[in-house]
Image (tube, rainbow, N blue to C red):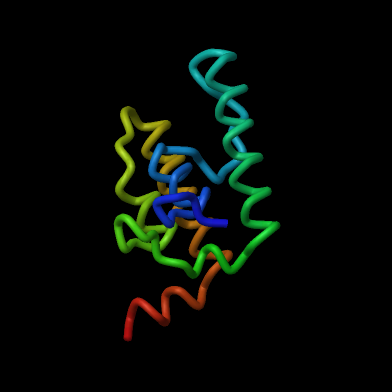
Length: 102
């Protein structure tokens, strides 16, 4: 369900840097808890509406994997997490690649 700006929750969360990967290690326990919560939310949104991965964000015009690619990260662990997120989003919506190539 889009918000009042026409954006889906997955777009907003990915733009905020929420990961779509399971994280076993983090710099501190609070980061692990926050990241695990965000990961669970992203997974729940995808499970509830897998087609959302094929929807361009109303605000940016980007697909979810593209939004994940534009988020700012710091450090090697964050960059790896970002790449894993992009990869997993693409694996779950391989048809978006065909669409982008056309």
